[in-house]
Amino acid sequence: FHALAELFLGLINREKNVIITQFKNTASLLLEDSNPVAVPLSEPVAVTSVTSVERSDGVETGVWECSPGRWRRQIVQQEFCHFIAGRCTFIPDEGEPIEIQAGDAILFPANTTGIWDIQETLRKSYVLIF
Image (tube, rainbow, N blue to C red):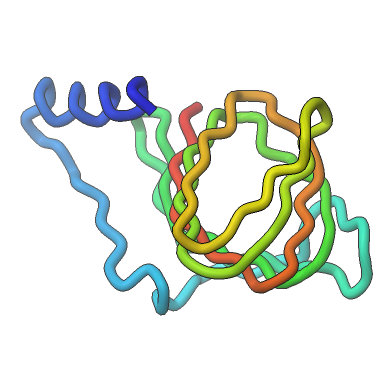
């Protein structure tokens, strides 16, 4: 978390033409792109929706939502998430299951792999660091 905060503070302090990314009303924001998950493990196949911005400094940020279902996590970048709505379990390949619900925040280190088990439609704001 501190590295993430330092990254953003560093950008604000060092650059003159800083573009600030803001997503308003994240709980009800209309999401632009919808697709089935890449590696589904249940029927019906979960569908994700996202609105995001990929910046030239190696950071992507956005709002993401997923319908109920089980699927394999494919993101290899470090990711910080704040969960806005829903409930799920993340089962890391190495470690104990993590119960997640609206209001929680989590930092996934780079190369965190495992299984998402979404019980209630899940919505989060996130930051990926490439």
